[in-house]
Length: 270
Image (cartoon, rainbow, N blue to C red):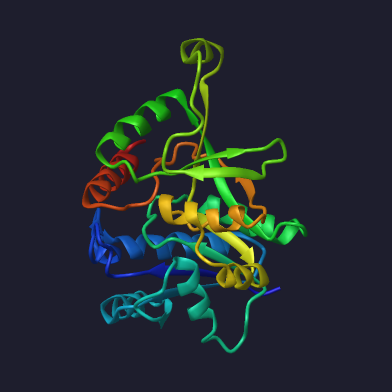
């Protein structure tokens, strides 16, 4: 079963133009994402290819310098998934499974990608898979602080008893009653943060692309809500950062500074 990790990397971000090429602790953000994809691919007993899908020759040239395969896609793709399908359509050999690894998530631990690859290949019923991590109270406190300056950075998710996702939001879900008591009972908060990686069958990805953008998808700016609004299921895989620095995607220059600080501190730790 052929599997491919596709990294959509668009140049023209409204909040952070050219962000795939932004330097973070001495390497471009896209360089760091390509490295983690290659590391994950090497760590699983599955044949996995890595491909960058971009809309800009500057990014294309940079990726070629890194020795990673890349293809040009139209400038105006509605979503990252549409860009991925455009890239895959140019391949002579179509994959069975596709992993969408965002080009603006340089702090993603490789084992998160490994978890998605393993779930896709071991769970025959899973058509769309994504990782989530439970926040400690300390992590939730920091998340709340960061939301004050960058309210649309970071996504939360709520799950059912079978780890199927119920909803995603840029707001912090769920609302928490009796928080002081809950803090005394456990070091873990009830909040799960979504990690912006998706794995799916190619057929499910193609189905997704035929669906119209949905109302809540447009309001929240979260394309995965299109699936939930149309009655499809998304399987969550719980992952843990361990000692790896925790951060969601880089959406603004302020996020890039946070990412750089986390990387430098992590590299300096014993």
